[in-house]
Length: 165
Image: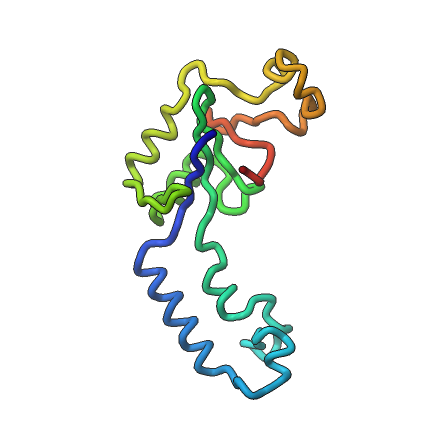
């Protein structure tokens, strides 16, 4: 059992998103069956195709970015999302500080306290999902492959997967 942590936008960004959502909804033609049939996705720029997101999906897009997970006995495990938002420790810390941090239970956590906790969690001898770990725990032999091993980026334990439970 562990705890997942997420980067969420600062209040100002949420309010800006809210205003954009409100403006988009006001422009919708609620009686146009064409709008209904495309889930109220619109063409914002005439040169573009239909937006892949309806107004609500656009509002929620990237609202919660999974940062990582802490679990007893393990080093903190970061989620680098295939380098979508950050690709190294410096970029990660800048990204975290550009928003707020929330745990999976909806509790806000002071950003600097989160960073300190995550960098220290499981140090110096917490578990890492690597060849040594999988060899020792043969019951996990299906996962004993380099594609499942954790990576290390700037001293951070980074999951090989972007999906966490």
